[in-house]
Image 1 (cartoon, one colour):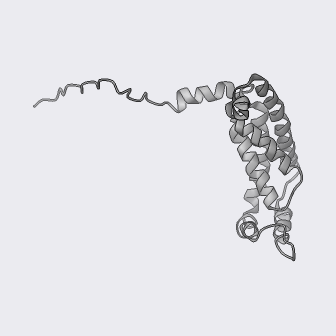
Image 2 (image 1 turned 180 degrees about the vertical axis):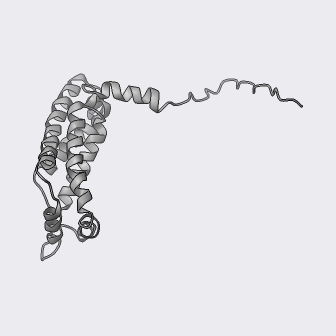
Image 3 (image 1 turned 90 degrees about the vertical axis):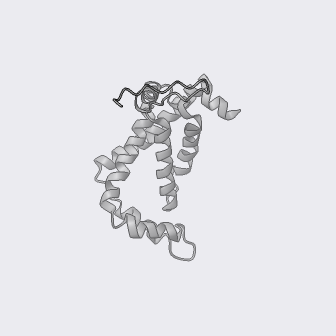
Amino acid sequence: MMNTWLRQNKVAMWLLTVLRFYVGFQWIHGGWGKLTGGFDATGFLTNAITLSTGDKPVVKAAWAGFLQHFALPNVELFNILVPVGEFLVGLGLILGTFTTVAALMGMVMNFAFLFSGTISTNPYLILLEIFIVVAGANAGRIGLDRWVLPYLKAHVFKRHPKHDGGTPTAPAPDHRAA
């Protein structure tokens, strides 16, 4: 019943728009600060790796291994991906464009930050993003998704009509010379 309400109700559509704006602002604010402030993930990654040691490690060894052997050696890539990703998630949520994808990508980043030992607002944002994802298209109906999604369905993801089980049409005659 809650799913139906989130996915189809007009009141839910308006509430989701407010929720989208709030979550989107959080992401765009963080991303813009990193884009304009000379972001470097080295310290964050190093700290997360450090948090995987000791008597009560906060970061699990498998995640620390990923950070140490992939993320840290490729920190220049992450210095671009993190701020651009945060900004694009925020922009998508605020504009209501690819809303579900934006919320999912926000959740991926929130979980990555949590896995790295940073609590902050990550659990709260994940909870709010879950509502946006469950609501599906209704979350972006007051936004650009209202036009973008139908356009993509009609022009990019064209599907041929399925055979309806009626009488099959006769094959075209073969006009080649015998």
